[in-house]
Image 1 (tube, helix red, strand yellow):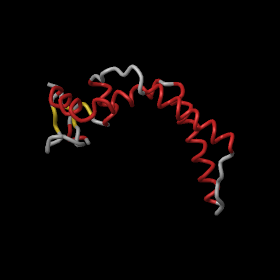
Image 2 (spheres, one colour):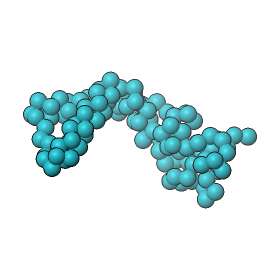
Image 3 (cartoon, one colour):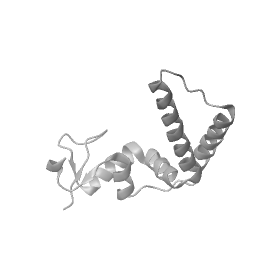
Amino acid sequence: MDIICYTGIGARKSGKHTKKQYLDVMNKNFKKDCATYTKSLRCKSCKKMRTMNRGLLKKSMKASEKNKTYKMTKKASRKLRNATYNCNKCKNNNLKQCDLDDYILFSGAVKGECDKM
């Protein structure tokens, strides 16, 4: 019997779940969130937005190291806004129900022995 270790929202006190128990908790609490997250991993606009955010964060951190403030250009701001809009549009269309592997990726749960956590 496979054990899934999950200690988040709706979890059992021991953190140990069977597949059925885990899927029941996930379907009850995170059905739409997981589907949206899984869809955003495959969406080109969402990938572009994450890449842009990473770049902007690096620039901002470099500026703060020099005790300066990073100000985004209007062009970069417009690109990020468009990517965010397109990401939100694509990740909320045609959502498919998550399976066990999708839920594990979404929640950070672990298959196997809970003692190793």
